[in-house]
Image (cartoon, rainbow, N blue to C red; front, side):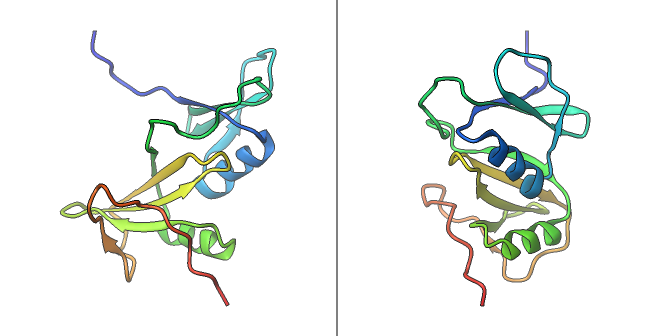
Length: 146
């Protein structure tokens, strides 16, 4: 019985509104229909698929990604995404994948989970550098704007 599709990932978040706002504004997911569970949460959609389930006020104290390094999403409009992140001074890192028409933007959500946004076949952004040693951290603060 082979797996055929990753349906969604679930995040226990501290601040539901702040987390929903982050994923809508910076990742481009849409807060959508969710079954009437007896606990607060949200389902975030990419197109017609609820790819992220958020749960808050769960009583859990663990946050962040633990052993999971990052979650990757395919995105569009690299330049618009970078402009918005820079405008709001959101820490991020931009990388180019060697030998692929792929540029990636890494950000952390409000609970510290690293999100990789993949932009395939978009115009190369000036100054983008290729991925380095896999053991090196891939996240750093955005340069301050004057």
